[in-house]
Image 1 (cartoon, rainbow, N blue to C red):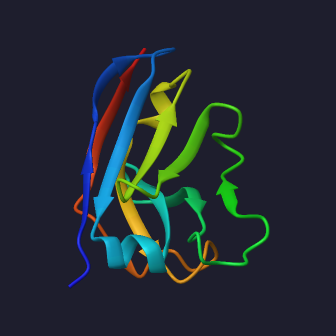
Image 2 (cartoon, rainbow, N blue to C red):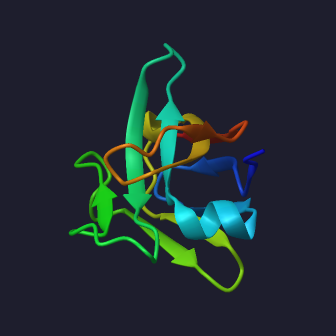
Length: 123
């Protein structure tokens, strides 16, 4: 069973920073692209960022949504089987539930979902 576990959500003022982390089993981590979706209060979903498996030939190996480009950075630590999302210069419109996701490639990264962690940005 694929398990993705998020941590690091919380409340922050606009302009602040948060780092979300997601851990997975080593098998899940190695064989899959991983990423972050966010779900807004009105239930709309957006793929925020994704990063390819170290075994993948995907080019480019990362994806970052235009809405967060230059503010958010995705990275993976292969030794710790962790994928992180560093979020800088947060805005109130970034308020959402952030889900760690996994799948075969950055284009299809939503096969597996974590339960999500709330990020709230106040103005």
